Picture 1 (cartoon, rainbow, N blue to C red):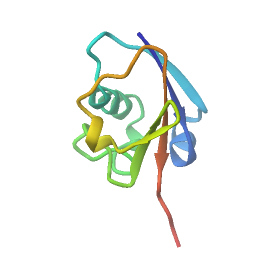
Picture 2: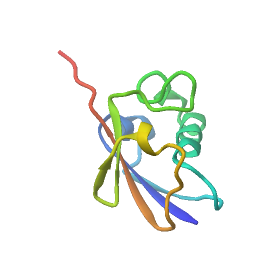
Picture 3: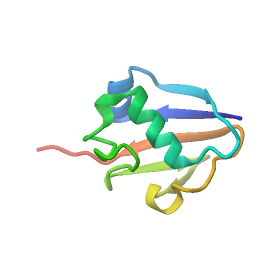
Picture 4: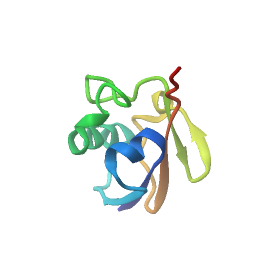
Length: 94
């Protein structure tokens, strides 16, 4: 199964990529996605991903095929084949 992850804002800076396609196994969940991103991009941990490596910090959300989703509500669900997932971070500074 293939999913596409689009990186925006700080995640784009960390990954140095606009989007990446991953091939994942059936049964793969959004929580597995968070774990995979934590392993692949450790600089996200503490900024985007909780230090536990399993959850996004509350200032982050997914846009899945154009629909806004809060990660806490869907982490244990599985993406669909061909899904396009954008990572949106609401990190502000002053």
